[in-house]
Image 1 (tube, helix red, strand yellow):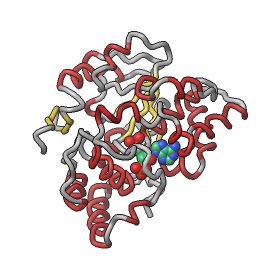
Image 2 (cartoon, rainbow, N blue to C red):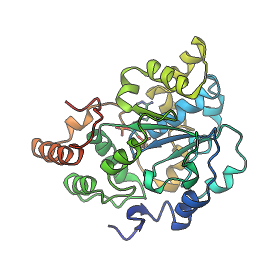
Image 3 (tube, rainbow, N blue to C red):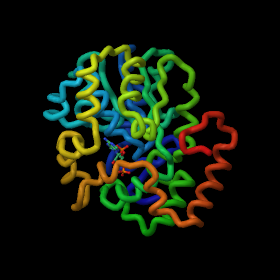
Image 4 (cartoon, rainbow, N blue to C red):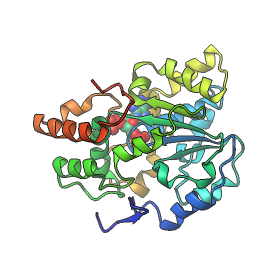
Length: 286
Ligand code: A3P
């Protein structure tokens, strides 16, 4: 673990992003409201994409909010230090984002009907995305190599812990009415169908024109043009100089351009071991 990280209840976090106080606040003091909506992901799984989709759904497709307010203020991270102050100002329904594992989530969520949209991405693609992010983000030390970062990823020795534990923890909610499983791959394959499913889950009725606008404004190319979505405003604060690392390629299967045969075999072996007792099949599972 790097000097810039600390552990809280067994999970690693970056001290450049968070403090124990932030995590304790979320876990013990944050009061979930029944109509809160949470966008939850393991890092690099389409978090900002879902922020944009939710923002557009709740404005009936009107992109003004998305184009004038940064995404991290529209759908803020509950674990981010500034959130505590923003909470009081927000109207219902409140939209939040979190990378926290289930074990570290708000105690007040227990028994509530607040909604969770949990987005999962092929962990090989999420890893490649993380590799490029780690090269530029101040939350990470420059990875020594793809191989070494892969070792850390597979052993959960990175901020927010193990991909496997994150997935298994949150997927315990599968089947509950207030839990929606979504995949990055489904968003890619059928954004319209996915948005309709999300609307149904949220009880939002959008007409065709509103849906068209959600699809258009949440497309990779339009989000790329929207500085309120792709975090250019953040760049000075948390990014080393370079191209925007949040919206990099926006495709599925980029791992094939990065993994060697040996790395792929190693990954598949660990994946098989860790997921052998897991009952849900994801789009990337053969
Ligand atoms: P890549 O690095 O593979 O391009 P997160 O928001 O969780 O950090 O995830 C970032 C990943 O989601 C990046 O993947 C980014 O390009 C992708 N992404 C964000 N918005 C997207 C969109 N509208 N369409 C496709 N991919 C998107």
